[in-house]
Length: 107
Length: 119
Image (tube, rainbow over all chains, first blue to last red; front, side, top):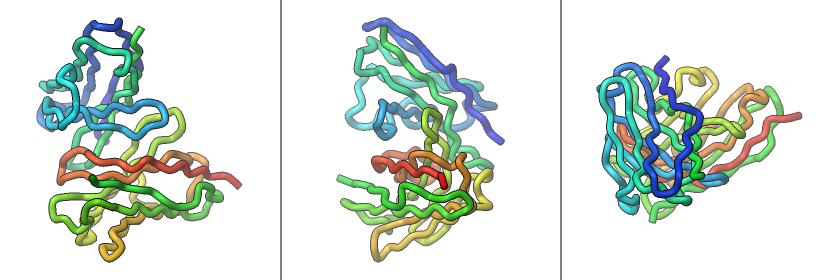
C-alpha cells in the first residue's frame, strides 16, 4: 500500500522558517496537499495541488513537491501556527492517503 | 457557508456495527462537483481515510477497511452515512465527515464525533 512519511516533530523559533517534509514513492507525480490541525479542532486545508493556498490562508504558508518529497514551508512562523500538520495525496490504488503527521512546536 | 455535522451513538459494543450520519447544510449533496467522505482519527494518532461516496451512490473505500465499511447517501435528506461492522477497540476514534472534489483534498470538514468501542 502507498505510504506517506513525515517527521514526528519540528521545532521553530518565532519569526523563523519551519519546513515539514512528506516522503512517498514518486510523490512528485501526484498532487500533494497539507492540513493544519490544532488540538480539539478539525483539520483545515492550508495547501492544495502542491503549492496553492485556499482563500483565507496566510501567505506565509507555501508548498512544493518534487521527486519523492513534498514540503510545507511556514515563513515567519507565529505562535498561532503551532499545530499538527498532515500531508495527503491521492493514489490510484489506495485513493486518499494521509501522512503520519508532524507536530510543529513554536519555541 | 457549507456545514457538515456528524451524529450517532458515542458508544458501541465490540462486535457490533458503528453507524454515523453526516448532515450537510448550506449546499446540496447532489452537486455533481463533489464527493463526500469519512475520515477517522484514533485518540492521539493520525488521520485515516475510510471511504467516500458520490451523490449517485458510487463508493470508494480504503482497501484496509473495505470488508467492514458501507457508505450510503440519502439525497432527499442531504445526508450520507457510515456503517462499520464488527468493531473492536481499535475502531475507537473521532470520526469526521468531509467534502472533496474528485481526486481533490477535503475542503470542508465536520466538527467530528468521538465513538468509543467498549462493553
